[in-house]
Length: 197
Image (cartoon, rainbow, N blue to C red; front, side):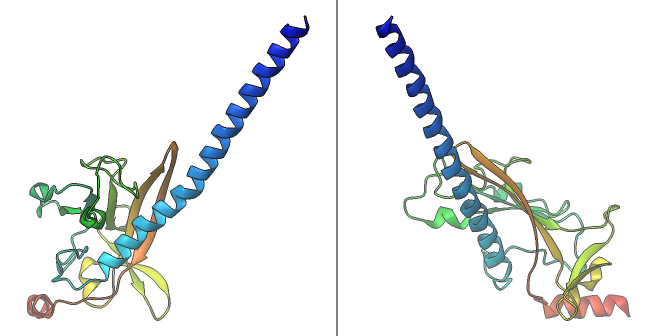
């Protein structure tokens, strides 16, 4: 009887310790997944503020803007899938420039190798429900407002960044809204002004 009791006690302690370890591991991953999501957002913010001539730049350069524009950031190059008619573009994550980068085991797991509508890191315009107008950011009033896509010559558009960050078994889906600096291509601006006359 004593041996049976000791065996049950040992088994109970074993399961308790095992559960506590699993919980603490998950909590550690839950904290780390926030850092992963922040890294994804940092990459997007950095790339949106690059000059348009930089190959790492992310943004809709059309004037007026394409309301359907979307850029997908991946761990492998899929630029052959770019479709200027639909406004969907594929860029490679800056992580791939690291010398020891492994797409199977990335240091910051916030996108995928292949396009995946639920897991890949994406950036798109924030639009009205009917998709005909775009939200813009007015830095003077620090407010967003809806307007026609041609307003890009005066205001930067508001972009929605969709991040699915992963660390171990922890997963966090984040939607962030950001607005880049206004970068006007003067050739396109002159062309637009000519069209509007």
